[in-house]
Image (cartoon, rainbow, N blue to C red):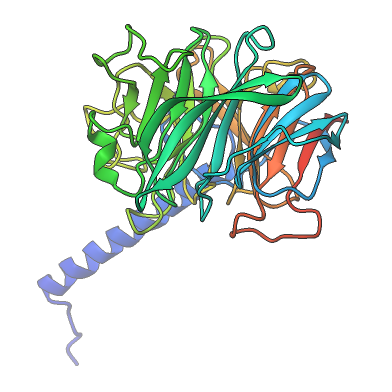
Length: 395
């Protein structure tokens, strides 16, 4: 009886399939190993998994304010007091963890989804310059915008308001908007693409950018583009910015696509340089283009980074000079550690906080880390005390 033989064509097909299967298996093994380890090869541009956790920080946390509504920003006028910006438009005043008379309420606020009262920051010379800078969304003639408003603080009450910048494109999604003063005494503002991704590349639009202005709202003469607030562009929806205390360079966090505008995931940590492009919407995730600066770190699945601050205090030595942000979908505090050059990520970790969605991360004058939950934003699980602000305390 003659043995059956595979025809050459079938043999080639089986061989090709075999090679493909081996390649896929090797890739999955290597990729899984990367995702399971929080240690990142210095200089590597990696897609990482939000479930990687290490234990370098031993902590507990204590509630200092409860029954809030989507607290977006926290600032500390004194060591024992804080102002809390709620997305619904109120700025609350707390002293010794007790609510006082409200500081201010914006009447024209639009807070239908992701937008509302968002950014808030103290003047760097506060209280000698008693100003508080805010960013908020509002509607006018069926269009939505964000404006930057400066409040004057006299004895914990607002006595004057001044609009510094208006008509920033906004929408109920991708409205930005985080504020931060730099070591140069300039105010930096993040803006979203307002779900019109093409405007992120348009230098004539203020959407999908990081902006830079003088404290009085004027355009700095040394901005990278003539007569323009634009500092960097090609951003989708950055919601966290702060300056590295070692290098003085600006860092940001940014939300990646959400299926309707690209593959899900791709949240970014970026090192921001003046006048540079950051890719959106031409590229995302780990894609690259020669004219854009790549992110330092990309998170897939999404963790939804909602803030960003460098830790410079002394209460948590292992976090010294780490870049921290709150994860909404990631439900925790993420700590990013840079290498000695401050241009590459060395490692990261996630501090699990069993309180749901985490938005703001702020550092008090005495060096404690405070964080806010965002469980009443329509995407979290609420309880009778949501939302809350907690103080992270070393054990």
